[in-house]
Image (cartoon, rainbow, N blue to C red; front, side, top):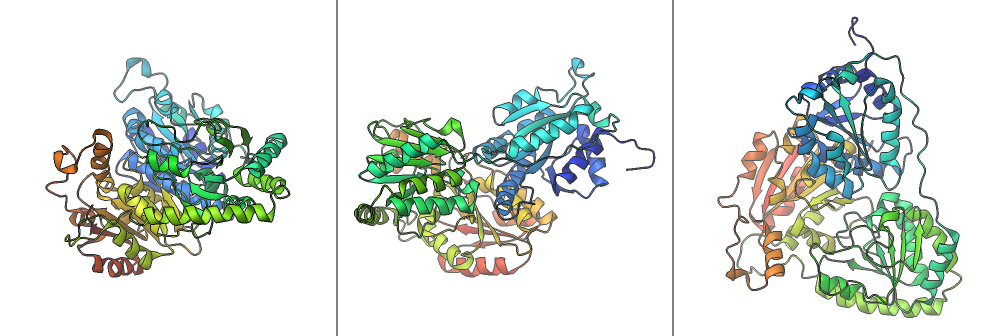
Amino acid sequence: MTDTAEHTGSDLFVEALEQYGVDYLFGNPGTTELPLMDAVSQSELEYILGLHEDVAVGMAGGYAQTRRYHSHHDESIMPVGVVNLHIAPGLAHGLGNLYAASITGAPLVVTAGNHSTDFRHEEPILSGDLTEMADQFCKWSDEVLDVEALPTMLRRAFRVAMTPPTGPVFLGLPLDVMLAETDAEPERLGPIPNGGSGDPAQLEHAAELLAEADEPVMVVGDHVARSGADAVAAAVDLAETTGARVHGEILTCEVDFPTDHEQWVSYIPPNDSLASMLMDTDTIAFVGCSTNTTLTRYEETLVDPETTCIHVGDDAWQLGKNQTADAAVIGDPGLALQELNERVSSKVSEETVTERLETVTAVKEMVDAKMSQMGTGDAEDDPRASKAELVDALERAAGDAYIVDEGVTSKYAMLTRWDLAPEQYISNKGGGLGYGLPAAVGAAVAESQRDEPREVVGFIGDGSYLYYPHSIYSAARHDLDLTVVVSDNRNYRILKDNTLGLLGGEEAEYDFVGMDFEPPVDIVQNAQSHGARAELVETPDEIEDAVSAAMEREGTDVLDVLVHD
């Protein structure tokens, strides 16, 4: 702060971030943010520039998701990503990845500058209702209208973002508020509560239902991983105690159960016939689920109305939302599962568990046979790799890397072929393209803060990559160690698949308007223009060496790997 400057709202904002343990501010600035930029320049905060507001939000989201994992092992770590945008058009630009962060539960504090409160009646350019715009994708959306309210509202914003179920909040920051003088100081944050272990009566009822089941199934969702490694371990304990077979919810985007466990069967794919087959049983425990439904409407029910359903999770809205809850436990998934396991352990005999495990084995063999073909394709004479070959080579070269995935049609090849460990994988749960690449950059920022950083690999479809290729500039600008592997089939394959699913018929019957990249974009030159090293990988036998070399180098690499459908 210069000698002539007074202590302003911008200074107070920056001081609060520093007091709360924030190290980075993601953003793309404009005129209404200039006082804040000046305060940041005189602080210890590092500003991570995104060349588009949605890139900035995506980077903050991937950072927050990754930093949350770190905070499970170190309570001193602040997991919140903080991003600052520019007034109405800038916030509008960021809504795509604000939606993605909301669906994936990323704890974000999103801010945007705004016109001075005494100037808005003239409707200057860039005007808009910021709080209304952000509200549908946030746990709380508001605007600071008085500098004296700033400390309380900032404290509240961080607490709301971090309190389970975690998610984004929004605060508008008018120019006159940020320029206003104040002697206020940041308020202490205080501890963040968990969801508790749940209602004892509901826990007891759930234990009785699991004990009485013929073939219990546990469907684990991403709220399990968000609760920490102890929650994943508790899910394993309950599965072993009850002899349940285990699946990941539809559109799983984190590792909620070890996939090399003998009771793990599969992720449930977003296909109504397969999903209903896998959930065809007498009793299902849905644990930490939120997206367990298909992309488009289905004719037959996913879960038989007569199936007994147990719901466990920290988000009350999700419990009993799409299926009736015969028992509903609101609480931290890990703590609730531990309590449920204690109650059910005396109710299920070893003989019953053994009988149930025999059924699990039979189902697992059947499902493995179906899932093993995912990603193999049928282009026998095509010199390009199949998605399965790409995933296999990537696993050999980067088996322990931290994966940020937006491979879309390559995703299930990865999930079915690679035994990913808890806290090793995040994906785009929201489904809108353009989150994965910025999120991979944010994850690389988060990993750079660790004493022993993991290698970060962004596994991105070409359609997803082309949404925000200039994300690579931010990675190169900040000298981040990041390897981006582009699964490049030069088309929006997901749309072709969905066309066949919705309209029927054979692929040869369609022209697929707007779904092919012809001529193709030169991804290598594009990545190089943004400061990365890049190369084209054209055949399967080149993939492993290219990935290994990229990971051995410091800095940002982009590998454009050609694959066939």
